[in-house]
Amino acid sequence: MMNKRYVSDYITTDAILTWTCEDIVTISADTGLGKSYFIMNTLGSLVKAKNQRILLLVHRDNCKNQFELDIAKLKIEGIIDDNSIDVVTYQSIAAKNINKKLFDFSFKKYDYIVCDEYQYFIEDSSFNHTTDIALKAIMNQSNTIRIFISATDKYMKYYFKDFKKIGIKEFTPPISKGEFIQQLEFYYSDDLVEKFLDYAIENKKKSIFFIDNIDLALKLHQKYPVETFFNCSKGKKEYQHVEEQQINDMLKNKGFNKQNVEGNMDSTEGKIVLISTSCLDAGVTIWDDNLKNIVCDITDTDKMVQCVGRKRLREDEKIVLTLKAFTNEQLGGIQSKSRNLVQKPLYLMENGQDAYIEKYGRDVDKSNIVYITKDDQNNTILEVNEMRYLHHVIKENEMVHINNKYGDFKNRYCEYIKDKFGVNSYAIYEDRLSNYELAEYLESLLGKRLFKIEQNELIDMINYKVNGVKKKSYNKLNERLEMINSSYRIRPGKSGNNRYWIIEKV
Image 1 (cartoon, helix red, strand yellow):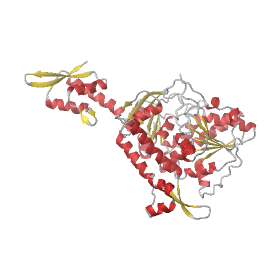
Image 2: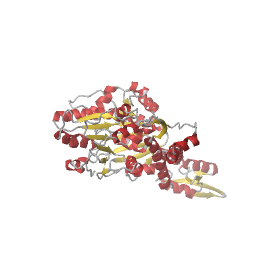
Image 3: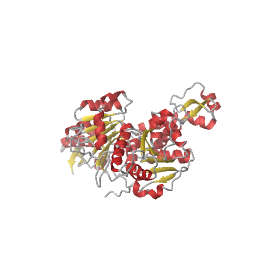
Image 4: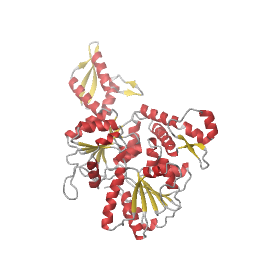
């Protein structure tokens, strides 16, 4: 039984009434624990009673659309009124403040600013260089109670408490991890994603595929245009392949290929798989009892957790989760790239602008972490995009953590994610596939005497390595067969002067 404790159980109206404009409030709650309910119902009914207003800031248009649908229902039910909650994207705040004056959007009419999924500021900074602008504008509103909510806010808390030395008032309802995962499986080869989709379509397994690579996502959709539907950000050229009515119906009904509240099938009728980029990573709610499979090819680990969290779970409901894994060598490459990217901004922060110019001169920071702007006296200066800088610092530190804690494991990344989700075990798809092929191979050799050439073929097929060294003795090969729970073993034999191996079933 899942022992949930919801946000509104943990943070009462009496607690809210103790908050002041000096407070920076953070609420850390896992997906499905009622963060949206708290904003719209608990806080919403309070502001209605006091004739106040909430500015709800979100990071995706899909999220904004679903919030607005829910708010419309709450107005009909009388829980809030027409002026209680306005929903605005962070991107629109940044656009209105791009000139750095930070007053082009009027915050004055709001009593609460709620920053939903506020991991956005760091998480999206790798491809959006204006996330810091919205954050600066929000932090300047010292006459408004500011509330920051997320399921994955560890790094933003680090920004507040350690990087900026800002005190925060933290609320973290206790949660139980890992109970919703029936099976956790990883894969390494990009080619396997298409096989997973083939399997889902052929067996009518209702699924969501989250794919970082938009070209791959579109390719998968175009292979099965009838059985799948596609979603990506509006700013992408591939958005022309998005059927907006299907996405809107999914947001409205919190699921797809299901009956709506009137009992009719909507435009997603017949769809088996939703294929989406990470634009659906947070804020969107999907209640769908028939959706049991999620495949996730997302590089950023916190964003991956957010994607998985779009599927809301009922008591004792479980899913099959298939995730893209990264080799130890790939982890090292990510670490090196992030370490290199933070060198220039770090030097600027530690040594100042004059020293930076003397050291780097015309060597432009192509990552745009260091950028040119103007101060209040209209002097040209260099500044550091703190969100983008911290994104790469955090990424480097995460890789260091994985290598230090899981350095003895062949699949370090898988061990890390296993612990992140709080599950006890996982499978590697390629290993499972390889073990199946090995079993077929061993079955074909039963009772046969294997001499030198055949032994070498068997050694290559089992491919057992320890610290990079391939093991060749039958004892070591049996050790590997036992490790993978194989029902086959190698027995040595001798005929005259000739030694051989023979495969037996145990």
